[in-house]
Image (cartoon, rainbow, N blue to C red; front, side, top):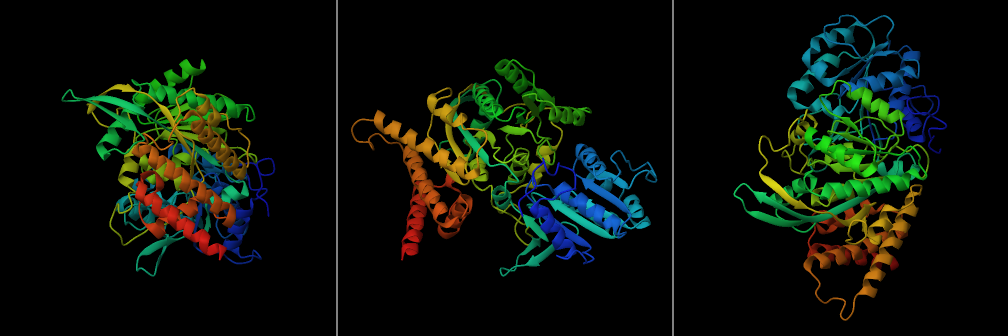
Length: 580
């Protein structure tokens, strides 16, 4: 069954379903639709796949069957409450998004309410009374928020334990703490560790194959950074080359500093990419995710200088933020700049270009942020995200298709996921991350195009902003199938390598630096992974993950030359065995 696209099933309606949504309903009610359905049901679906449509269709079905008569939707943010209410109204379900704890009974004109997790945590007994008073269905949007500390989890459990039915939704269910998420089932694996169990899962890889989400092209930018420490020392480092943790952090901050040229050059490149996409997607929009209010305003000024047009600025303490987000979604304006609050759940389907201009690096936040760009409106649309060439971000980008479950019984932060940092990332921001005083002063920051990451592979070589080599990648057509993206990127890279060889004279290995050697090994490994992808049909990200499991070591962007050589030998070994 092919997925239904918006011309056949508009977002937020339930008149027609995508294949995965129909399958999820069958998992709930049985293939023949006569099963009563479970009390608790966890659906994990990649951002942009249509979790809202599935949940509202399920809610309407349960209400029509008189299994439930009241609906409570629990969301992470105020904006999402209104978004859910608008979507519900399209299918005849009336939801009050303005309900407050001191309000008393819900108005008779409504089928239910939309509230935030924080609202529930403030007065769980009130919401328990509401839940007990009628046969209730509770929908938990991004249910991992229900595990934000023991107090929130306890409040959610107290408030909604009496519910007749509970449906949990998440695009990114994994957390770093070991607090169980209420109403989520955990199963013990062979290793004795308990992991969350979803009743239905629809990952990014299958969604991409179905055309439900867009392929994401990551464009990484490196560059030379120079900064002055408190002691007055000047330090120079190149983003994208092996650095200590502190050097990487400071070089990253220097890159995002509006005082330097790095962010100016990257915003200009992102706008050129947006112009290319608007040739075939006329209303394509761009989003810059900034770290703090000061940077957001500075980036908006830069965009005005580049484009001649103003950018919509959305700040976390702005009471009109929801109206601004909605208005931007309904126009064809080019750019919006947000202080990270648009990282989760917010639906602006026309967003096609992103700039990851924040120093937040948790996998959960990264996945939520990239989820803003992947919703497909018609087959062939692509998304492009610009980001600093930082090993942590490169690793996240190369593992887009990896699915994670919530793991209990393990040391906190074992795998680098950090929800404390996520909470920090999403709080209101008026000042830079580092507090009252920056630990250094940016002296100079310039950008160079580093490489493209797509489907677990890396393409391209270093190029100066505005060069023909950079334009080859910025000018990739905006309407392509996923396999066409791979083919075109391989072609672009082959052309770059051929041009580089023609420019060289003498021994091609002469004067090679360690960084160039690693870059060459990465290209060789990615070429072999591409070949294995064509031979086996496995996604490239999955192949890279299998190589990591077989050989050990970090993701490719953080791997040493020896670790990459080991993976090259391993995949050649696989190929030799397959031939025999």
